[in-house]
Length: 477
Image (cartoon, rainbow, N blue to C red):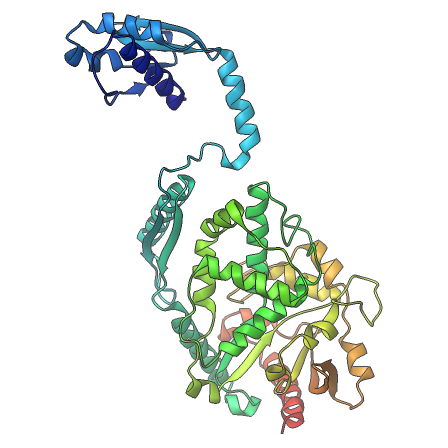
């Protein structure tokens, strides 16, 4: 609105100067403000007062000169001179209708200026130690830092958020190992009795979350979403189940080699696109949409980079790598499931380096129990799941994608008992397989304080778990 008035005054100044009615060579800096009294119009300018000294004339005379040379516009209802020489503008209804139409057309982009020079700006804020207590100051600085970053992004700049977690990946790994060690120690059980070393965990859920964030931002930008039509919907293209596997493959390949994961949203989008290409999906994100996504996902890129494990080669030699994933099909379906649904196709997409070493521990629950546990995972706190992740899956997804699975069919059709046969890369991999029967809930009591764990529940849990792990350990011996 102010730029519109500024353009009118600039044109009037140039015309008056060309006609010899003004002698000042260049348009001076001027103010355009909303009058304190609405009766004086929508906007007021002090241009005539600013020109008075260089012109050597009363401001009101200069104001009259400028008014004579103002271009005609249907967007201006009236122009008047007030006080010592202020120019007051009353905008016509047509102006406001045009602005409303523009706002509707631009959607989420309305009000975001295009800077004369787009800059890449890094905003560094906060440093909350994830293994220590949070304070009110941490929360305040998080709000301030993120607000500044959002304002700069809305102004058209490429913003990178630098949010230090005090090396959260390593600290959280050490904390997790410590908690697990205390847990096993409390029960009188050592890792090696369960055939476990220090654990390194890979999970495809962080990438599902990232894909949902991408689709949310695309819908905000009124662009077609790449992954999910809505927050409650399953994948638009089910081949993205394989996209997740290719991302996990890449994370596995980096273990013992990568010491630092870059928190770069552009590189993260490149990873998504390359994994989709390997899954047979081509949908590059380019242009303005790509730029907007990079800005919106900056904090997510930091979160993901900090969450990925970075064990050394020496640490990896003593570790057990856990890859957590769940696959299935719609309620009522019967195996074999069509590509790319179910465990059969996702396991076949794992790298040979994984398949040559992998064993499968299948946590056996009914679909009803799985949905109950899913609802608890979405609820943090003592009434919810004890997992660090606290994530839930939409109910529609639970029924359409996890309503059943093909693990029993895979086990029953394997040529060797106690294995799952996976055809991949021209070879058949026989993966040692066992179940941990959790159809009757054996684990929820672990959310309580250890002093309240029932001895009989502990004994049953460890007997079943040790037996299952013994089975697959023997299959790889």
